[in-house]
Image (cartoon, rainbow, N blue to C red):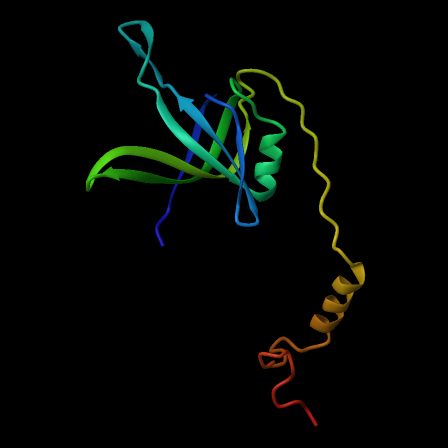
Length: 155
């Protein structure tokens, strides 16, 4: 499958939006990216491109607590185009980035990093039991039926 990825630099243009999609949290925000170029010895701004950035799960939670309107950011992720139609004709196009990572652009300011705590398993005994089961079998492993019972168990 061919997917396109993009890394962009820009400014957060609005408030961070938090919503639930099914049982998963989605955090979205808009980034405006304006190129600058030298025209006859004078730096000028190009046309601003706007992107909607979607951040899922833990990335979304971290973005919600870290990013706000006006922040300079760097975003990397899978890019796609949403085309909206009205009466069968394209009426608008939105560039969407499903972010892999988001960070502050440190060429524009400073930031402070706080590592988030990793989620702990609900019952450490379950993890240990799974590890013991996995290591009890040879590399080709057992064949299990839909109920998890061995197929053709060794006699």
